[in-house]
Length: 567
Image (cartoon, rainbow, N blue to C red):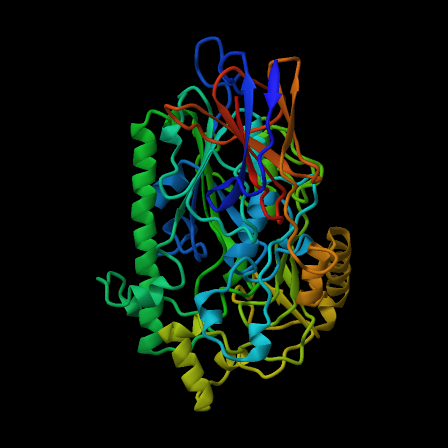
């Protein structure tokens, strides 16, 4: 017999800032048990599917010894490279982290679901200091992917993986509790209950972030400023050399932490069954690199080490985009790849039979700077389309402008001291099209858009870029206030996911439901002794004695109130 007693709206608690509705249910049946995870072991007790470890770093182009950089001191990463497949044409979809990480977690271009601007879910400290009313009008909102779209880590969890993220969540939306088993600075694959369960774990290393150039300015220095190779768009002076040398010192710190993570993996006994990824979230955190879609802003190091060292030392020149990472990990994990994903697998049994012809990238609002740039690149050529050609490249951007290197460039420009290639980035207008031969001109300073010998290729690539924009539903041309209304119709106010409702089925199970299309449901089984983590709801939960908490969350919406069912 089941007795339900509904509580008034005033009888609420709060869990993690989320309203919690408590519903007592008296049930004369036994203990709660969650859904069974798919079998992940062989008869011998060994894991039948690999663990997958992501080691990511911030704001770093391929400035590594493994990529031929003689200035970099990166022995741990170089050793990993010798044991890995080294990808030489891997690209982020943006020159900044938030849109790029949105692409990584969803397998979607950020331009297609409102994740294109930097940044959307909060005001940065730099923006908060601005007093210009027009700039203060920048909205705060969350990107909203299609209803069926999920964080790919949630798909892995549904397929038996233990998923952890330590600790960055820059996805342009608040990740639902279904995305990770653990999410935070203590998250670790070692915390899973059953060592036979395969894991997917992400560790984010922050030491090479743009801000560390000025925050570490007084730290011990190792790189000789005279040894660094300046790109041609920088004038040569002590200030600029010092900051670039500091960037190399920060990369040295990244290398040390990579070594620590790999040693920890070895000590855990998991190395022989773990595929290791190492990559950067976009290009260098330096002026004319970060935030731009030149190769300096989007080309990243990427290496993948297999447990059996398959393809060790091989260089793979295929084009790889960040939208390809999610389907590739799902492929390696032998998990289904959703049809809504816009990338293609480049690893595992589901590897695409058609290699990429192009990668695509975008630049939109960067903190207070409004912009609209799209780019397409094949193995050799890069086409950039500036939709706002009448505005300058360099505009007021307070966060970037804290870097001494940038302050020196601004000082020299104001004094009329920039000339030749360094002066190009400070032009007051841009061409509508930029076209570069990245083999002959890797720094992309010689614009060939008007060269007759490239006219046919430019036309072909421009047509492909337009087709990509249309096919993926590029939102770049939508004014941001209107974009928010499209994401949260009709008035731009964030909707709340409908809370879970439940009913008893077959006398001893609780069935959960939310009326919000695309909502992920999670539940938490508790008793007086302990509290378990959030489990993804897939089928009615067997009940006996204890308590269930349940929550619903569609990405981009507010999470629902938590309901608590006592029985």
